[in-house]
Length: 142
Image 1 (cartoon, rainbow, N blue to C red):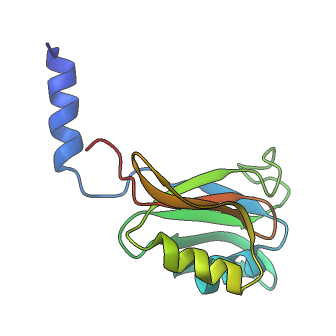
Image 2 (image 1 turned 45 degrees about the horizontal axis):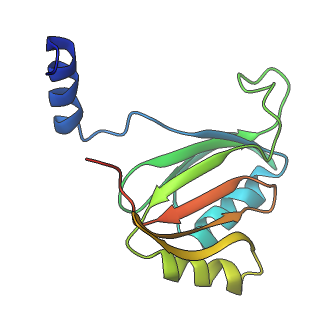
């Protein structure tokens, strides 16, 4: 039996379509990371702020919803204590095979090849600075 709080949270969660959780990452070479995430993994560049090779803030969207925010490692950043290349992000996709093939074609580091599991199909790779990216068909228990 659900409590009133659980019922309210459930109804809010099923009706809200706005992205409210954004993984945030730091990179030593943020422009190169943006290039990899867009050209190889398939993100769409929405916004990039900064000067020269310094990225103060970037927003990359996933074509079917959600996205990530990232920036260059820099003094005074709110994420100053987060080492670059640290993180793990899972992305729901109907096309894990196509993304896997792009990563392999680009010489990317696949840490777990395509696998069929009871809950879906997917794989995991690392970007050039070490962040883990998992792509799979499992969309949670919606």
